[in-house]
Length: 84
Image (cartoon, rainbow, N blue to C red; front, top):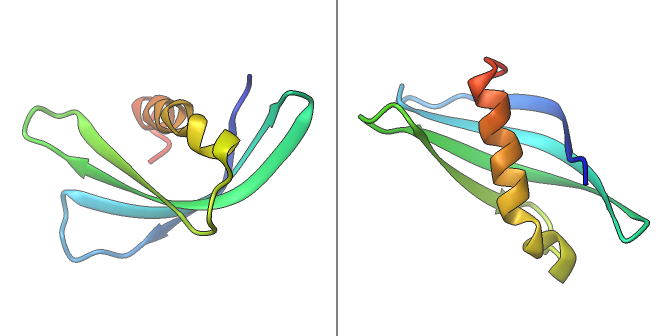
């Protein structure tokens, strides 16, 4: 399953080691497309690895909740490539 993260917008924060974003997430599961918005926070820990917290803007259905780990992994991959 391929997860796409688009329309990434940074939300200003006074704390330099915590970054907030809003984005659009798209993926297909069981031949059904899912398209929804999330907010996420990346808190950069002293170890250098960011802690990623996802907040759903709308109440997610069960399939979206089951893919939360994959979404978090995709965000982490994008962070490693310098997107954020």
